[in-house]
Length: 318
Image (cartoon, rainbow, N blue to C red; front, top):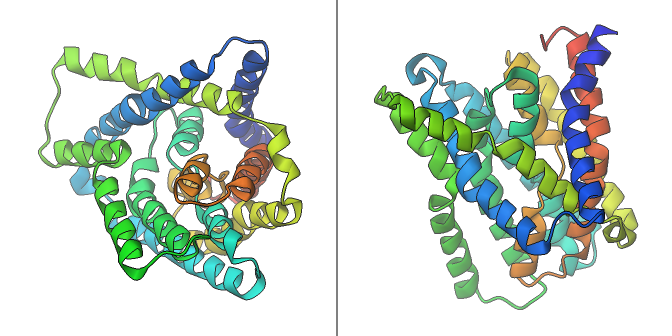
């Protein structure tokens, strides 16, 4: 019973805030412009501030776990290559291969990862380290597969230019920058003045509630009406198969508690809404992606509750 209550307390509050966002949006509390501004505020200001504060607050010389970061990178790479290889074998319509692959491996690690860990432990814990190993690869792999599996004819020169641009975009990614600057501050053992510390803490506190409300407000059940069969396959891979394959390996390597939960988010959280934006911007239809995002968002609370309950019952999460 204790494990069940821990699991429900870990996931249900996060889900309920998204439900609140959905209800408030249906009641007309949010305008489209407000939601767009909220997304930008979270992505460019609040979340980077939170990650900076958490990274700068750790002792880099004793807390940085290279093995953990390497595992995140390896798991992301193996998952991506395996899903792509299987998609090439079983999906005949090349026009949706790129969308299928991206939605199957790419998690909402930044927003929901931080939300779940903060809900459980009070800070982002190991999420920044998980993101160092996975988020840059999420972006690079997405550009590669969406370019090489593009419905449009793309020359080798155009493909190379897109992939090169992706690397530059990663360097300008506010989330990556927040982590990088936080790591630098930790390495130099910098201490912020009290005024700056309290200001950044206040800004960082906006991240979780604002992001979850915006996700809920953008939820549209109508998007699940297309590509039902492939949407189900994507959801099964994203929420069940990847955690089932990689979490036992993580436990074998000694990753428990916050590290294990951060990995659950990386592997088994919903497909990030960014998938849809990137797919559309790179010439794809986007219908499969939007359907997968909605479906995995709806089901991920159930599956994450299960994974937390399972590993808590086994003694790997305290």
